[in-house]
Figure 1 (spheres, rainbow, N blue to C red):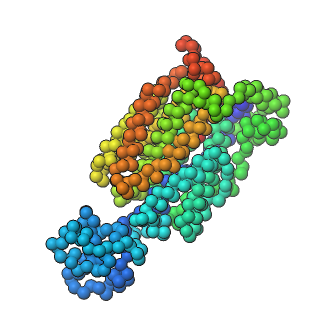
Figure 2: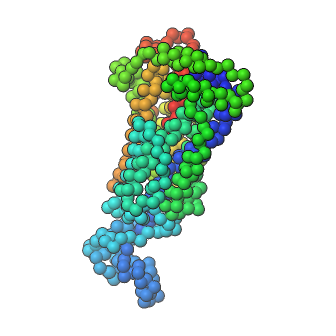
Figure 3: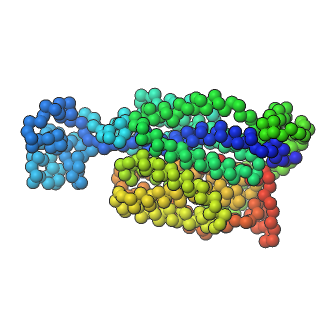
Length: 533
């Protein structure tokens, strides 16, 4: 009896599977919110140099009706090319000359200036505090702001590799220094990756093959709902420590409420814990209303032996690159994952540059990714896997390139949201596409390599955004070019897999299957990979 048959035996009306999914939906939403949390906790407000004699005694300096506070600021802070106060410079001593309307920016540049040695004054109209205002991550330290999300995503990568599970996710809210904050964000990423991977795997392994795609879609929608949640919460919470606590504190409750969930029967059987597996299967059968359960220890033992025989062929990581066709597919899928991860996190973590209302922008972005995940399920079956991936990468890349040369406004927002949505459709399609391109015998190992490259793209995305401090349009140009290149790579080097049999062996993809052959997917081949967050 196969694993899939065991689950079918105890499923019946699926009451347990529904309760399990509902138990994990809310935790998954809150875990997903941490991925883009720093759109708010690392918000960069408008700022200028602190002027001690003015900021501390401004009410005493209204010596004339013609010298209001704005005019007095110009005594100590030069104007930039747009006629606004410089963010990172001030005059070495107060200048009365700039008050004259005939003074040009060029003549101001000849005056002696200095950095903001007394700190900065921050605009609190949008967000009252963030890690940027807490530790002055502006001007010469502005690159550190992009370092923080990269460190968090590095924790996600290490967590995927090690699959560790930590329980403390509130620590960053209490830290007093930026290095400690970054360390705790790394540990948080490490913890979240283990929790999300374990939750997704547990749901999938307790679900029959016909319901797995639906469960995968629900898990993906939880991720988008988490992004949307950030925007909703940001309207009422504008202090970064409170924000961090609000999205982290519920984990204490989740930790206490998930203990009723049983261990995976598949895992117990594979590890030869047949008594525990039988007890768990009977418990699930009871919850589902199954009264006549004909399972014994011997049945479970034979299931494990069948799986062992089926997995005798052994391959290592080096074998993935010994076969030309397999190597091409793995490298192309890796590049596609690298590209979509870089696009999503590069654009999503930089929505502040689209406009001042970041709460609404975050909600729009979250809603667009939610719709994109849902729509991808239908369009993928109508137009094919390769067609959708190529079209979305090309459209997304072109829209990002076009937005790079537009000023802030509605059109630029629409193009960026379109680019994010196209990337999300690609990531959703990749779940099915990669399973249909990679042979069963090396599918999990291949996907593990692809996932590592995917996470590297996510880690690099915030670092690429640092380049905007030198050339404002450069990050979007890079994102757009990579997306267009990836679309061409997929178009020329990967086949369409719609309505094609899934390959079992490496020989199936090296020599191709018989043209008239149609084979149903093996029950244990249909594992959905939970990694698209």
